[in-house]
Every structure is written in structure tokens, then in C-alpha cells.
Image 1 (cartoon, rainbow, N blue to C red):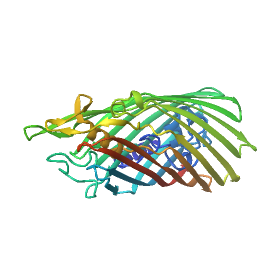
Image 2 (cartoon, rainbow, N blue to C red):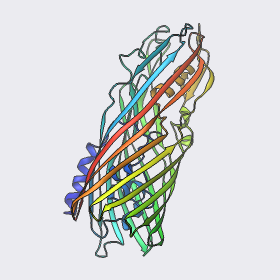
Image 3 (tube, rainbow, N blue to C red):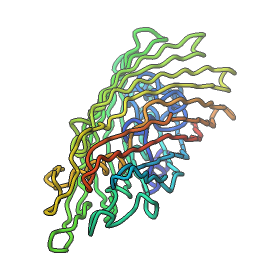
Image 4 (cartoon, rainbow, N blue to C red):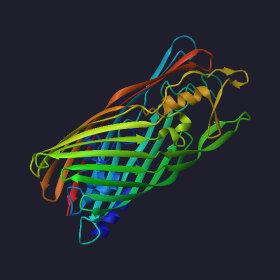
Amino acid sequence: MKRKLFLLALSTLALAASKVYSTNGDNMIAIGPVARAMGGVTIANPQDAISAVFGNPAAMCFSRYCPSSQVDFGGTVFMPSVDASVTNAFGMNQLIAASSKDNIYPIPAIGLSIPLRDDQERLRFGLAAYGVSGLGVDYRGTSIDQKDIFGPGAPLVAGEYTSLQIMKFAPAISYQAAPNFSLGAAFHIDYAVLDLGAGSAPGFGYGVQLGSIWRPAPNFSLGLSYTTPQKVRHEDVIAQPTPTGGIARYDLNLEAPDQLGFGASWEAMDNRLIFSGEVKRINWGSAEGYKDFDWKDQTVWAGGIQYEAIRDKLFLRAGFNYGENPVKANKGWNGAFTETGPADVTFVQGIPFPTYYYETFRIIGFPAIVESHATFGFSYAINDGFDISLAYLHAYGNDIVEQGTGPAGTPVTIKSSLSEESIEFGFAWKF
């Protein structure tokens, strides 16, 4: 049975990479309907196998399904709404605006947790595969996508089409060192595909997640989790015209940043009511690729509640998640062009970008700018071994606006707006 479950999780690897819009920077706030319904809290007291592997592998020893095993299957239907505009590009105060296309994305996920020996709570193995991160826009064929509008090889914006897809495969292990203390570790294998309009560039990255949980009281848990940076090299992903009429191709490194999280959870009313909260620090500002495009570090606050409305049958959840937009809004840059070329150039990993196109690429091509999320959902136990879960997430709309000098030498304003909705569903099998 365990071998079949392991092979089933491996087979999901091919399905779990999906272009998505994510919500803490370009990260999902959590994986699966249970954790997402509680605002993304996963560090101190996750309630299912996939949340434990994703948030804190040490939690597998204390999860509510212990000492049995559990397999979780989940799916997300993600529905972002993205808009962009350029104002006064030619000095006549004209507005050029459009909405990004392709705004519904399916994201599958699978996770399991099983005991490795007879004392089933002390040593456990977990496995998860899921689409964890990504971002992208598609303005092709819209008014934003205007080629050669400022002259040969000089479009209205850079970043009219972008796609970042990141899938994570994570085997994990946890060990209960004492009745109230456990340690855990997960090995992360990342498969990432980046497309900036010149073709897809896949790559692999690797990292480790470490975690611990301490229960100073039976109804109170504290959790700590740390994830290492995970770098992927995307070869020949950037294409730029050369002065001789050719095309120069460049590689780009993108590094999922390291992050440190702390969580606390309190259970009341004979464990029927759970309050959980956590804070995470995501270090975008020191991660390759993100720091090159002026992202800053992000602190994420999350809180969630679960109420067991019908004992062992119906679980109601709600939560909130907030992380300040990590994309910096720069002001006063010089994107003008002269007879000999751009007046100012910004270098990204040694690659020269005319400053105007650097800024439009950052703001229009990768608008990871939402901050506040409200969530709710429920689980219902069909029987002792089978649960179904449903969750809804709303990410409140946010804007980012920059002002500088455009290629025509006129003051120009660029703007992106993003809001998100998602529906999560899943089922859990306990055995």
C-alpha cells in the first residue's frame, strides 16, 4: 500500500507545475484547502498532511490524523484580474490601458504522511508535490502590445508576456524526540519554467526546509520553520536585439528566497476551537533575480481559526493573511532615448536594459503586488476515513504606480493593478 501511494505521488509530478498568480510575492500563501481556509497558517498546528509537509515537516508527528496515515489530494482554481496602463507616453496625456488574458489557472497538489515503524507517532515520512509559486501576464494582441511604437525595436513596454511556473516535490521526515517536542526536515526539488517571450527555459533548483514544534501544554503549540534559498538558472531566456540586427541571448538566475517563520496555536473547548497565528520573513531583497528587479524583503502575518461545529464531522474555518507588496515603486527615473540610444541603462546580472524597459518589465511584467487576503472554508467527514474540503480566497486589489521620463522625453506614468480570487477543493483519505 505504501509503495503504491509513493508511486501515485510521483505521478503527480508531471501535473503539478502550472502557471499561476501567487499571493505573498510570487508564493502561494499555503497549499491545500485546509490551510488556505485558515489564512495560510501552517507552522504550529497544521491540520492535514500536505499542510505539514509544506509549512513545517515537524508537525507530522503531532497532526490530528496521527497515529494513522493520511493522503491528501487538492486542487485550486485561481482567478486573477490584472490590468496595466501607460499614460503620456508621447506627451499628449493619452491613456493606453489593457487587461491581461488567460485569467483562470488550475493548480493540483498531493501530499501524504505515513509512519515508518511500529510506534507510529515518533518517526514519520511525508511526501508532497504541488504548484507552489509563479507569476505572469499576457498582454499580447492588446493595446499594451505595440511593437516599434517609439521606433524600430522600441515597443511601448517590455514584459507584455511573462510566465513563471514553479513546481515543488518535497520528501520529508519528522522525529518526535520527546512527548512534547518534534523535529522535521524536507528536501525540496524545484522544477521551474520561465518564459519572457523568447521561449520557455526550464531548470531545477534544490533546497532544504527544517522545522520544530514544541508543546509546552497539551493545548498550546509553538512552531519554527526555516527554508534555504533555492536557485534555478534559466538558460537563453532573455533575447535582445543587437546594433547589427542580430539577437543576443542571456541566461537569468532566479532564486527562491530563504524564509524564516514562527507560529503559535491554542486549542480550546476540548480541542474543538483552534486559534493559530504566524509571522514569516521572506528575504526577496537578497535573492538573485528578485533583488535585481528591485524587490524588497517581506514580512507576512497570518491568522486563522477552526471550529469543530459537529464533533468529528464538520469543521469550519476562516483566516486572514497580510504581506506588504515587495515590489518597489521607483520615481524619477530617466527612460529617455537620444539619437545614439537610451540615456540611461540598468544592468541585471550583467545584462543591459534601457531603464524605461527595465521599469515597465518590473511593473507590468511581474506585478506581484497584492497584500491583504481573506479566506474561509470547511471540511466534512463522509466517514471515519474520508473527508472533503472546500475553501475560498479573496485577495483585495492593489495598485503600483511609477513615474519617470519615457523614450520620447516626456513625463510618463506606468501602472499595474492586481486582485485575485481562488476556490480550493480537496479530499483526505485516512487509513
